[in-house]
Image (cartoon, rainbow, N blue to C red; front, side, top):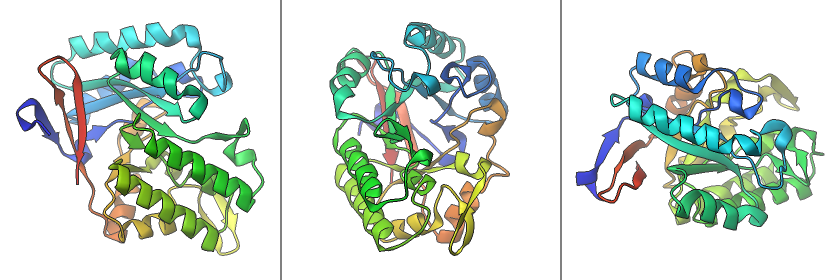
Length: 279
């Protein structure tokens, strides 16, 4: 780490998971998120629209491919106009081996984006919540998430416990898969995200009562056993979502006793963005 080129940002003053109207299921203009972040006293804001794909896959819940340049131009303009707030221009990607080279060559090597985060939202072209609650689907999710952690493409693995959308019971299978994700994240030095958006969604019923789809408390209880870097992001889909004061994410981390990581964000001598997480 080149500390002379980077600035430490406290985790409570950073959000790097942000969506706007561009994704088709969010609200608000990018500048409204910037204004809200400044109002809240943030030191850094990451704009991370759902990344479109060249074959238009998942386009029903992603920005249109033709909007890619407009989105990045708007992000870069906001960077130039707001010296008091560190703004990063990035994407949330759906990890899939078919798109690894495109992500790498188009978004990273060309320095088109400052950073990438990833999640798994689809299996067999179906959204997770539409999948049957089978061990086969649970392991397919886990294997794809492990591939994302191992790919070297991403700065953060987001909502790793999203399998709770379809596999509603906590059992030996979910524990084994969760441990595999934790171990892989540690091995590849990739932070995992407690995702605040889950607290805004409806709860689901299990044999042990109602729970949030995610974050899953049982998943994060396991994090105490691993030297995994844990971050909290809003996954904002409206400017008001940036304020986590009345959200359950920080109370969950405090209840479990997790130590949250801070962010190093800055610019190197060659103009490349630096984004790292301090354990």
